[in-house]
Amino acid sequence: MISRLTPSWTNLPLRGTDLVVVAIPFSAPLISGASFAVDEREQRDANEWVVHSLVVRNTAGRVLCYQTDAVASVRGDLLTGDADYLAPSQQANQDLPATRSTIETLVQDNPDQIARAQHIGDLSRQNMSYLTQLQKIVSGSSNDPPADVIQQLDNDQTALNGLRDTVNAMQTTERSELRGPSTSDRLVRP
Image 1 (cartoon, rainbow, N blue to C red):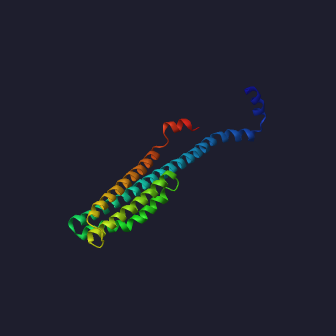
Image 2: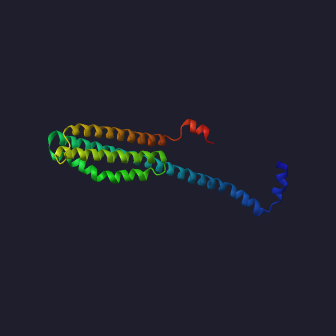
Image 3: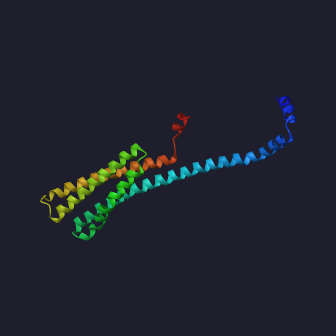
């Protein structure tokens, strides 16, 4: 094989051999630069995915935090009769719609997470409805008997527990997506 290349190499004009000799050292940095650019792009994509997952987890956690604050504030009002306790509940009523919308926007690329985000929204609205009803019962603007307070507290706690479970499932999914594909996924995929 080498003997066949030797006559053609020796018969090349000087300009052609010089070009080949000069091109070989310059090709290494070009190839290295191209692989660096590809690696840099993959690293940037991975970083964007990490940031996205952290934002989803944080936003889901904020929904739960707003709900927990609202529950605590309504219960504080129920126990003390002090309407000042209702400030976190009122803040939650203002902030929750935008936060729920943000979650649904963030998880548009994942059907399982979309379902969880919608479930979080449903449970959050249901919980706020229970809290509003509870406030009406306590303030006397409702005709419901006091026994309904116990039922509303129970409904509220059930909705809050469901919300907590769904938020935890969403955060667990985001955490596992950060870890990347499992070993079994890597074995199956080419």
